[in-house]
Length: 209
Image (cartoon, rainbow, N blue to C red):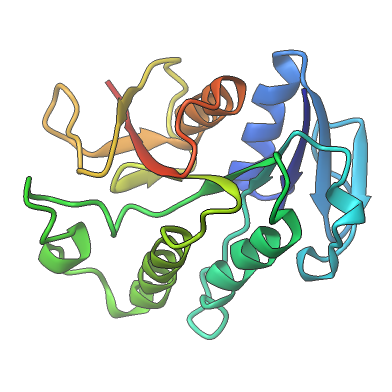
């Protein structure tokens, strides 16, 4: 399986790349500068300059792009939709590192995490960008996308346990009543989905056990 990891130099991207390589996948890092991942191959190019030809040889494209600055948070949505445009009409899959704010907190799916959680003002542009992206993806029927929401507490330096609980549209708590997952365990879940392709045109979520 040939996999391209966009924004592979980031914390999530590097771990996803590492996990995929460890399972014998043919992984190419898509990065703006020097490749700092374990991937042997790299495309050195800005995400927004990528073309259909750049992605033509891959079975799966992973978008691990993120931005935390309030004035650039909107590019989170723009980045994935650019990749959607490049993959339209193909049988390739697009697997996206998503956000937790849009997870539902009631069975009726009328309230989300962002509706009931007092996020810091500086975090809201990122939360809103992820929510906007998911809304747009739900209307896309000619790309095989999967949006993977982490738990609410997404820990960059958290422990790799090798275990996680797979959820769907609703916020899932672990055995301790927490919504938490490490980047390392999230990477395992991402690569499991890359391998299986079980959730095409769906949002899934993951939380630690």
